[in-house]
Length: 226
Image 1 (cartoon, one colour):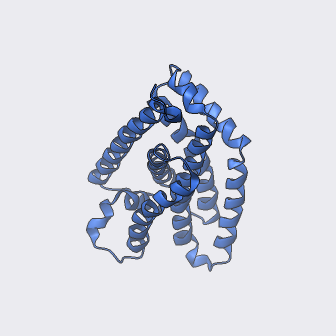
Image 2 (cartoon, rainbow, N blue to C red; image 1 turned 135 degrees about the horizontal axis):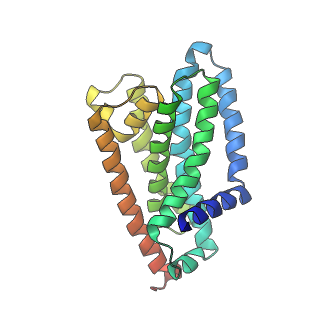
């Protein structure tokens, strides 16, 4: 019940601060990019757009959300509440995943992709992965400029191999790179059991690290140890 309440609170906050509106604009922009291309390019382009949305936008939006909460002193409230760091993280991941799934379904339908279940799975894994990365990063810094500087290497490390892999420019072993596993699912290819295991382990490690980061952020809210 507490987790459900936190998810609904996050959704309302995201609506209030215009994140849904921004995602709507981005979706229209993505559709415009898609439809100016030849029809034969629609599905490969949609795969890249769907992958980049939870990656680039999810990471930056999560950073903005956490920084906004810091500016409003919300970590003070969480630090003295019964809310667990795991619940806070799960609520953030679920609320942003909901938005990215909507965008993914719109783009997949527009491009004529029929494997919507795999699109949903790949998008969800990618969204949660980058949400956790965003939380880990934002919990450690105190300004938007710092956050942007920290996220540029993360984005480069995530998407450069994915783009090269999509165009067949990397060895086969790169199919087990976590972002590439998400890319394969969005493209309609179910990973091997080893790939699913790698994704689950990646999520577990990131969830653990984000939990440590959030706990430290709450403990030192406002620069004072609680």
